[in-house]
Image 1 (cartoon, rainbow, N blue to C red):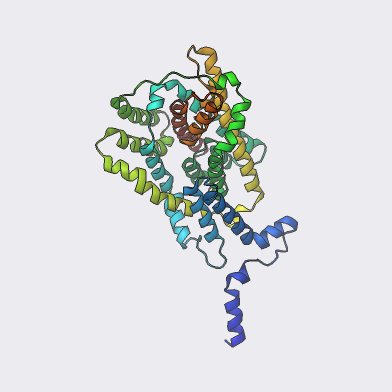
Image 2 (spheres, one colour; image 1 turned 135 degrees about the vertical axis):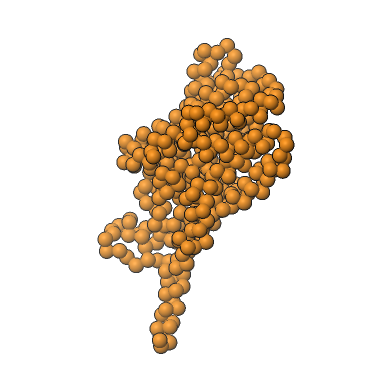
Length: 390
């Protein structure tokens, strides 16, 4: 090899020489631009996601690892996200096999207090009604946008506003859509304070938003221990496909409530969930390569995701209004919006909107009932979709 050939080889191994791909004769117009400049475009998008996580603090614990994983996956020449690459190995072990979302659910269970739901069981209806967004978006994806049933199911689960559940279902049913669905799910979760209030106010009157609810009864330790076991037993009987998610959730919660394994509970709430969150975010980000993300499908997924989330919010609010027709003890419809399982952000938003109308109206604990019911509801919906598509 002479010096010119050596210099040419060295040049073609650099990132600068490979950022822009050569044109493809089979592509025209916009497709050609995305093909040639895909990596630089995705790097800009990932830097924007980093800005949202750092500057705006939109779900930074996951948005920052996802965005950084996206940066790494768009580095030319170096195949970090490939089968034998660093991110590829993590993805195969944790996402493709479905391990990371389950560990996240364990941590969520260990951090969640089911007391408000146990004290006011009827709020479970609000969490159930919020799952309407999942099935509404599924039908739209199937009938209007031409997605297959497994793909439509994976897109619909965005309406549950539960990132780990979205990742778990998508990795099983439509792994090719994982990057777009994960980014949509976590982006909309982060935008709960922006998306939900206009919908809540449009569907309620001032008088309804001012409704004050009675203080919740105190829940005994025995009830808190029995509840996760009862939820798991019902899942085993009626919907075994939801057992991985609900089993992880209820195990984490049982460890929290039983009071005899504080070390395990503390590990799940802190060290374990933090470690897995890092790997989960990076491996999801590995699917943000230009070839997988910059497609018309991605745009459709983002549109359907916001529709699913909006329908879920509206479903919870409207169910609360319906319940008030049949109940002497009125429910503030705002807590219905917390039926999406963005814990505890959706409950905080319901409380904030309520206090805007009446500064003495503290809805946080009441909203936690439908909020944790939404976590269970999204896991149940995931089980239904897995059973339906397998």
